[in-house]
Length: 304
Ligand SMILES: Nc1nc2c(ncn2[C@@H]2O[C@H](COP(=O)(O)OP(=O)(O)OP(=O)(O)O)[C@@H](O)[C@H]2O)c(=O)[nH]1
Ligand SMILES: [Mg+2]
Image (cartoon, rainbow, N blue to C red; front, side, top):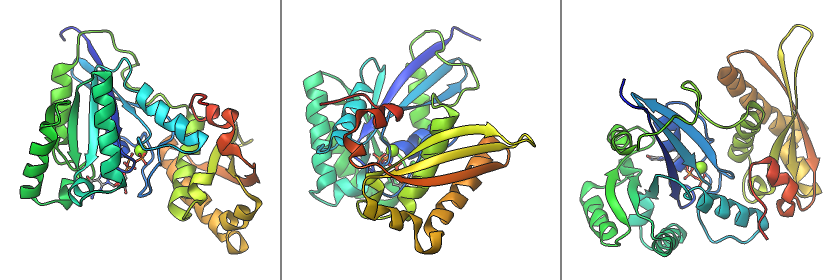
């Protein structure tokens, strides 16, 4: 073995660009939750991959958009903090959305380009979702993006089916500077089991509930114990911000909550490699999205 090498790589982009899907693909395991809704990732999550002498630490970040609520501001701040001290930046762009014409997504891309310029940082542009786009359109997009002056290299990938991801990883390994590894060889993420378990349940909440409800809810693991038989018992609270939301999370006869719990329990048992007993409670906590303590729990800083 040669000298050890190590790199921090920040993954930024508009909401829903496919950042978490890409990080999971690069790590080879699910470390960050993925849904079809925007603003799924809320805090910085590190996913770790080892390739030969190199350890790559990917910093998955919340999508960058124009923030309104205090929680949104904390999320966007977390995304930009993710690039500070990073050896490389991957700007993930939903190529299909970019080609579809002006939208919220293209406006967010513009905002990111401006901010990269302001900070004097170069990024590698990763055009994602190429499974949904025509090759000829992509060539035009590559030209337009390269002309922006903030990108050193362009990659075309499908984070979902893995196309192009190997080539991207190869470049990142080649570029990794010499340095000691920051994590043990077999560690895949920096998220604790308790937080990971809460995230898995939050993913199920996002997938089952609609409109503003997912954005007005959060999940915390409140207890992590073993039964007398030695089996893992996890208790979690789903917080909603209004009394009116509680019956929606519960569903008719408790069906929705049951389905969320069932889906989460199944995945947690796979992740932790043993049966998990999961108990979910729904609590109302008005204005939690403005409450610093709640998102400190999620790994977010305080932003005024
Ligand atoms: N067709 C297609 N869909 C993709 C691809 N990559 C991601 N997606 C889908 O895009 C949606 C968003 O993916 P995420 O990985 O959650 O996106 P994100 O950028 O992390 O989103 P936020 O955390 O909300 O900022 C999900 O439904 C993914 O399955 C891709 O290469 N092709
Ligand atoms: Mg994400």
